[in-house]
Image (cartoon, rainbow, N blue to C red):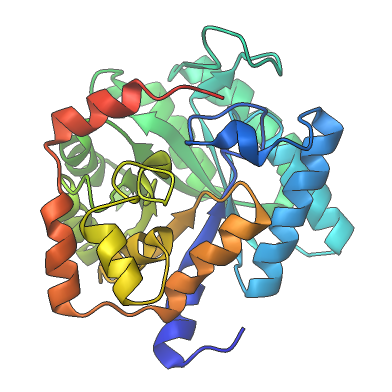
Length: 325
């Protein structure tokens, strides 16, 4: 894939998330159709390897997983081994704090359960290390919120500091209407006189921009800022309500592109966004997403997309109603 200098720089900031390819069900629109070829663990591993191969071929060098993403960590490690990739050739990040309880079924009431206790950290860190070994470069609290109290738990914070001091970077992901407050609370956490969290991963997209200023502050403070859900779980694709029509669809038509690429280009246009996570389920989706790296948006085009912003409460209420398929 040929890129001009800005396009190459934007490509280097893209990473592949594995939430949609590590387990049989997820809350992305049309997910069931994307895995029509079968969802046994063996079938899904082959499918995940195909997506990872395509990402590698395109130049993506960061993969993000989690303990609750079913077998995502296992799939990533088996792919790294099959490729013969040494630690450091791909940045591998993972997360603790949710347990996958779906049992590889589609008809369960709950697919994951949050647990931010010290016991959960110790258990899940041991599991992640057993699977990923020396490839694990960044370990994050999964969906930290003020309500769980994880950022005030001295035992957890001390354990994370020991991990940091042992050479694994420590970060957190945030979620919900209070993302900005959670980010600012995390920025203030220190251990041994140094900031504990090297990175913050937050939901930002052209529908939900409520934590933008806090992410700008994190970037200015030297933390790695990772944007997750830049396509709003599929709402900003041609399948979704905000991608099939309206300003995003119009701009995509004007630029001879697709809604997903334009939405991702908007994320890449944010100077504070160090890493933008792609959540592609298929190779075809990934290739469509990658067009964002070649699509620089003008200020007027970004201003047109600003018309899509929703109240944070409405956005998160709608997200909570998305079905796992």
